[in-house]
Image 1: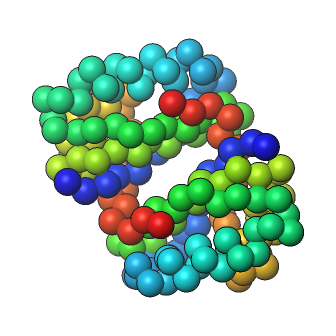
Image 2 (image 1 turned 60 degrees about the horizontal axis):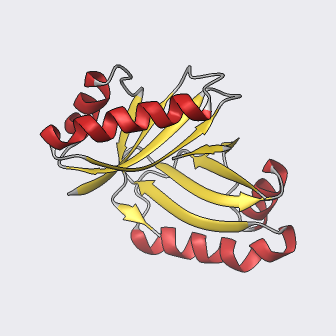
Length: 82
Length: 82
């Protein structure tokens, strides 16, 4: 399993409730793809959301996000962590 | 203290050792600004580095990164987290 950081743009005004609902939808859908979403952070002013996951591939991360209605604009493998 | 996600571009080819050295330089410099860097992730292929911190302001985060020679391209407050 590799680690991935995905980024969503255009989410200006996102609320804590909306972030929680989106994350919970991802958690409910992730099993079929072998993805495990770990954390997510949102900046409602710039409309940016970052999601950290472990997953078998970039495509698996994106398929979960597509299935729950919020495809990511970028999905980056992040093999290096400190 | 607020949470921030900062992003560095143009870091293609960054190694684990370089990420560790940059993070340790930030940890050594952060005290003067009241910043606490928590985690960092790097994608050597796209040259993207993400740093998560708690800090009194966006400017404080950037000042630490400038002092250690790697100013961020973006510093986003991320008040929402799951």
